[in-house]
Image (cartoon, helix red, strand yellow):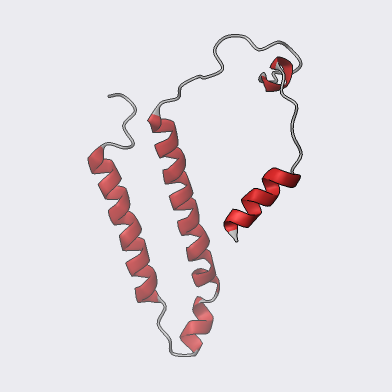
Length: 106
């Protein structure tokens, strides 16, 4: 099925006309200056991944906090599963700190 989709896309898809102007980077209407392949340090990507990791942690913790009272009224304990989750995230942060992922000067 995937091969059929690729072949159909190739046969019936639009063909984009290429030119130097269309392939150049757009910078507020001005001609591009300098190299367009600027290299970024891996630290920027690691910082972004760590931000996403802890952002997702908050997304998983907020529903547990909001329904904690309902779980207590049904005699279900949500405390220990949440603590295991938090300890795993803290262990991951400790690992990142030990590996030096958050140190900018190296």
